[in-house]
Amino acid sequence: MEKNELIVKINETLAEEFEIEVTDITPDANIKETLQLDSLSLVDMVALIESEFGVKIKGAEMVQVQTFQALYDFVAERTNA
Image (cartoon, rainbow, N blue to C red):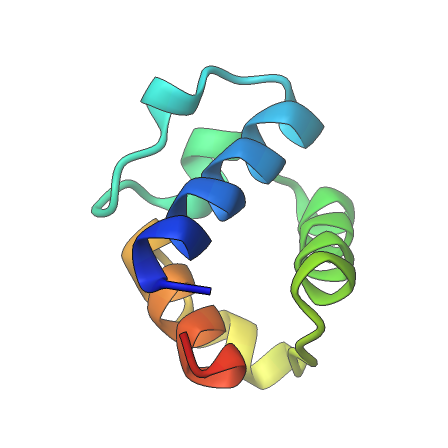
């Protein structure tokens, strides 16, 4: 999967799951703020990303992923996109 395709799929998946508009998701936006995540819904998001993209995310790694761009890069690295 190309990185642009990966970004579109991540955005669509998260927008659908967390009931926001895809246009609300921008590369520099803070994930927690944009998706209005509390600690429980953050775990849900991690599980969703893991199952959709076949990657494993450790808690310590997720702390480093604050923006959507960081999430795209993280998933792309793990999937070799």
